[in-house]
Image (tube, rainbow, N blue to C red):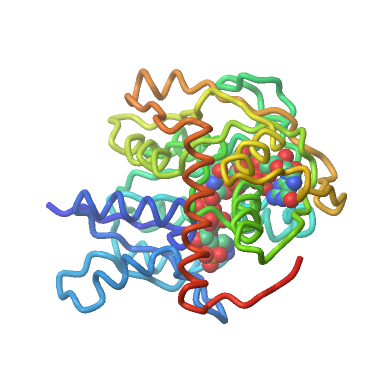
Amino acid sequence: MTKRALITGLTGQDGSYLAELLLSKDYEVYGLRRRSSSFNTGRIDHLLNDFRHDKNAKLFLEYGDLADASSLARLLYRLHPDEIYNLGAQSHVHVSFEMPEYTGDVTGLGSVRILEAVRESGVRATIYQASSSEMFGSEPPPQNENTPFHPRSPYGCAKVYAHHIAVNYRESYGMHVSNGILFNHESPRRGENFVTRKITQAIARIHCGLQKKLYLGNLDAKRDWGYAPEYVEAMWMMLQQDTPDDYVIATGETHSVREFVIEAFAHAGLDWEKHVEIDPVYYRPAEVDNLRGDASKARVKLGWTPKVGFDELVRIMVDADIESLEERLRRGEEYIKSS
Ligand code: NAP
Ligand code: GDD
């Protein structure tokens, strides 16, 4: 029988790759869409176009919001999904310092609203909660499922709450809820204000003569960067297990922001030191200095291993941004902006 999945955060980076994965497995996919004054479906338009005139459509968008419990409950009663992936969040760490309450509401309480809607409706779905390596904060690497949490941002605090409440619903009500503690994962669909994409988009503009300078914050922070399409496979694998559990998903390698900059500029044949300037506006009140995950448990129990390494990830992102900008310039869509 066709399986039905509900994804919150469908319009984000991970939601779009997860939708592709589930559709390729013949799922019926329902995604939460926030009301917005402008279109927010750019990452899934290619999927919607495929299905727009197809009476066998398998991808559906539903208005709702993680801050609005009644919209979630209504969806659960109506859809009865087999699997729920809670990826929706105010996911930007720096922004969370400016909007701590909103971040706590959506990223933290949003998860309990989903769990309550499942409990109330009696839907027997398996549930994925998007936990984060940001929860480890200042704990030294390598971080694994037994590493204590020491969040360093309102976003990290909200994710710790969401993580613990997921475990609590598992223990209290026997619900099949799994936490994926994912380390940073990137792609050409990465949000434009996360550091990797900010760098690769700037490189494309510099390459095309549209920009001269790129302003960044802390170049010394280290992250364990993987490739997003591989990480959504791990999410799906977690929900196919007989018992729910928590898993770290990571590459096991760490690189500084500076290394990403050097590698990315070099790949485009540019001298980074001519273009990169530091602007303290991008420093955070508290920083997570060094993330490197140990994903042994996922390797053994799920059979999940990452394939795309750091250099390849950088190349994929730089090439995609240059190609996409050149294409837009050819079509006359881009207008000249100086930095
Ligand atoms: P993203 O690109 O920022 O996408 C976030 C999604 O959440 C978007 O679809 C967004 O909708 C939606 N959203 C925001 N506020 C919402 C609200 N109030 N109600 C419903 N939906 C809302 O994030 P991502 O990189 O795909 O990450 C997916 C999840 O994994 C997030 O929970 C993130 O915190 C977590 N995570 C990410 C990483 C990573 O490295 N990418 C690592 C660990 C954990 P709009 O499109 O309308 O903005
Ligand atoms: N965004 C941004 N912009 N970060 C910068 C900049 C800049 O101009 N300059 C330096 N950085 C540094 C940040 O200080 C941080 O140490 C590092 O680059 C990575 O920042 P982000 O790309 O914004 O990601 P993040 O690690 O804070 O958070 C991401 O990963 C988490 C998992 O660890 C997000 O995707 C979170 O949602 C996710 O949970």
